[in-house]
Length: 492
Image (cartoon, rainbow, N blue to C red; front, side):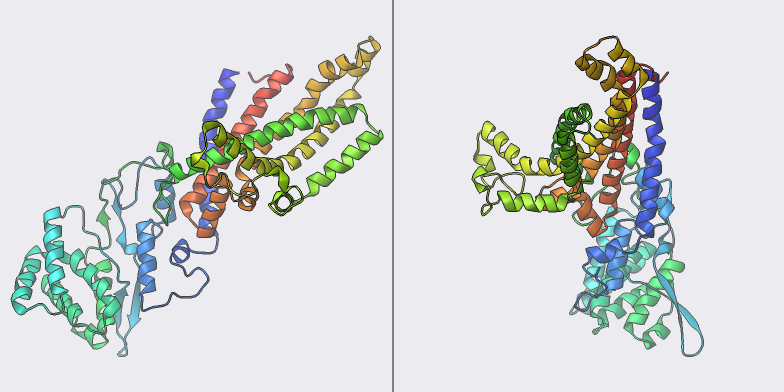
């Protein structure tokens, strides 16, 4: 048995990787763009104001690695090697993935233009040099700076050479928001021409923005911005090391947030599973022993009705019935949230009681459908076994009905119900989205739903992979329980 469990645990590794690959592929094939969602233009419109939206989207994609090749994104997410721009210094990142376009001129010629954006310093540029370059570029960007201030700044940047290109280009990116006054952009372009020897006079004839885009097109294709060595700030990471990334919107740790949400979802779900089995098994046995009677027929109708009720409707009805204006308001059951407003002022017993009362209605909503379905499966399994020859033999030997049912029939009837455990556990943990949304619970299901609305890659991957792992654990527990229930089933 131990060898079987170890083999299954090892098999979970490639299975989980397969789940991650499928979810990753669906995420990238599905319509929609996380950058536009985060920036508030997911509805297809544009944000108001004179903002270079293309640059903002590109900046967001670069910060979160969404501009990289999908294969690199997946390998970095899996780990243990980080291939992103802050990753292992042994690898380099292709900045050529930045957007460029070929513009046809009126005279029939063509020029390459690039999308303006902030340019990072290469790792080999010292921090002192970065500070000096930033300071001198800030002087050039001062509108009313005197010539006595500008000349030393130009000379220092010219002496720095290519090490000053990121600062100059990044300031050019900022200037794209106010090119109605191109004086500063012309200063920066003059210094760039002195460092690189590139003549941009023709570009300025087509306008300041064309000149700026021309500099970025040159940098992406010829100026060294096509590929740079990774910074090495975070060489290792990924799923293999237990890292689930950070939320794209708030940069909060997904692992920490997921753990906080699981502390809400898991207890409620486990209580629901326990109640479902405690109710379903005796009810199924009771119905099977009284097959065809009025009680059996009535319980069948009631359970099918319960199973057919949608959970969101049941939750809303419970809120209406037990709410402050409902007919059962005297029970004083909380209908929303997980804690009362004054929760922190309660004693330890008061806190426990408050949490328990808040969980009553969500647990009921999660449980009723499960026990209705399980009880019917238990009844069907009992009826199949109770007709077997060895059951007739046991009765013919004069054994009491209680011994026949609970010793000879029950164990073999549990096989279908145990099989269902493999699917009920992950469904309750990952499928509690509706219940948590209706009752305003900060659980994992709601977290997954919010991540889906925001198109947050790391939230979607983490929650889905967790449900996949729980499915595999449920299947493993079911297989192990088979041997305990039926000794004929061996896993040697």
